[in-house]
Length: 191
Image (cartoon, rainbow, N blue to C red; front, side, top):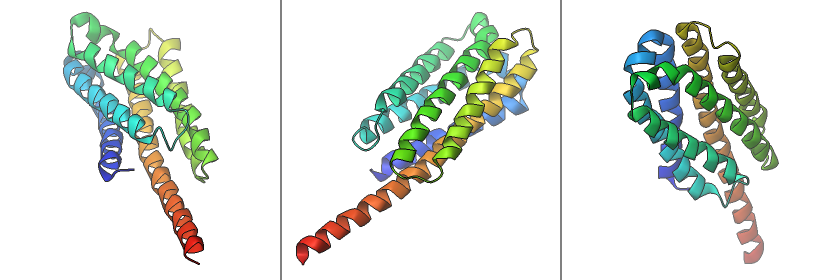
């Protein structure tokens, strides 16, 4: 995988973690004043994930789930950029849906990492499970205060960002194994 693709994946993970921290630190302001900023971050994350999907579809199976996730992020980013008071009021529910879908996607992708021998696949699966549960909690308790909901969803977004960074480590390990395999084949051919 190209180094630039890894950098974009790392940026997407860090951007998600930063977004989650913003949600935790400024929950009320996040709901009403940050729709545009959130839209930019989510849109960038979606674009980076889409680029990552196109560049890794040969190596990682089930690229359709990553494609769906990236398209959802792009759609949500555009939705937030068209901010209105109604959008600001709906942010907790939209975030809950997004975190839930991202969590489910991470659970599915964890098993892809397991297939290629990444020993920490379970970490991605666990983070995805926690993110999905937090997203579902956002729907189950709609009358909860916006602050509480934003905090729960902020934690879920941070978990998604951490899962992206863990996945990046898995990709790096997979590439190292692939290079070792190529070297063995070349050595066998040379003999």
